[in-house]
Length: 191
Image (cartoon, rainbow, N blue to C red):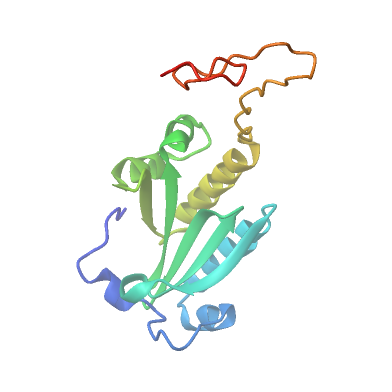
């Protein structure tokens, strides 16, 4: 299996014209078989996950037009249609990495891809060439598990505010902070 792109890999991106946004139908029509089926299968299964949204964005001259799948502003998956096939990139945060690597349902092939992924910006970028049915199934299982981790992660609670002292009119004397030059009665202390 190919875990790293060849030197000229990104020159064969299927949709390169920044001015022309591709459609899902155009991708299916232009991709060769079995890649068109893989593309449709991935879209269908990933979009069936609760709260996942799809967008097609121009990602610069290297990735060009890319299909992006997000859950609650977290990137789940990037799909790259190519003239000769299909590839995918997904991101694994450091907090997710050990969970995914220890999950029994994740294939050894995917775990190896994660270990070889590029570290950047506190995440690991994992690229996969999608050449077989099994590789697509393994990718989908990984994305389902990553979605599960995102949807079951404990929500961070806001930091509690510092307690505020409530002073009632019955309080006879409240000392000001030291060094303010006030004795608490409104009299200067000579400092």
